[in-house]
Image 1: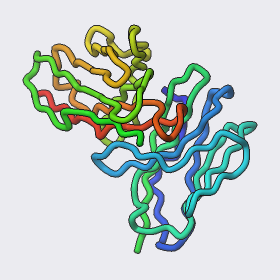
Image 2 (image 1 turned 60 degrees about the vertical axis):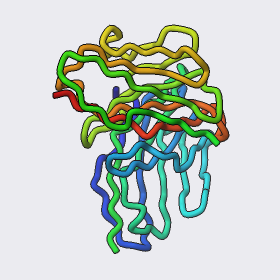
Image 3 (image 1 turned 180 degrees about the vertical axis):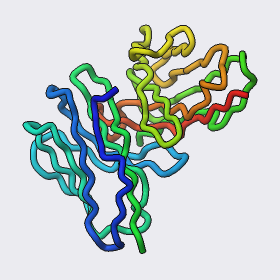
Image 4 (image 1 turned 180 degrees about the horizontal axis):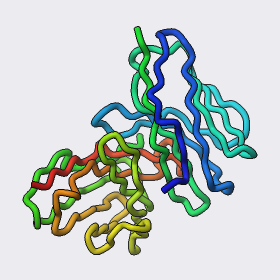
Length: 110
Length: 117
């Protein structure tokens, strides 16, 4: 399944910096986009979702969506070591399936 | 709200046996549940979409006779891995749409790690 593509990383940022995670998707009709965080050996947990073009902020997290470019990103401000995890981008297709990218491994260095 | 319970969380079985994994939405009704499989350091691969009261929809390449899915009620879906073999060893995760976060958001169970000897 190549519906959703992510840079697998690993991505390393120092504590307090901004981490930027990117994702592209193939189905232009997709309407809902999600960012999940997954710790090793655990199931994913939802960080945030976005439906409309533009930015959506939730605390230290900002999701950005550009449907024309089929691109969605996640910014993490003031990164903390506890943010170290794999971040999964997910897309809900018009057929109501949810597909995930391969995930980006993020390490925040104290 | 929006809690999905999955069990067993860990199962070891002999090759050739069948294993059943249960996925329950505890505080909401889920007409649609999804089953994913995840191999180490890989992403979640959608196996099938489970719809209450009807047959599951399988993704291309997933054997429906090997991975039996039953969604008999609005709160329970089961995945049975039949005649399991070592290559079926993986992390199986269910998810459900709905609950307090809305119909378009997935809530995941804790996952079931299957090891086939």
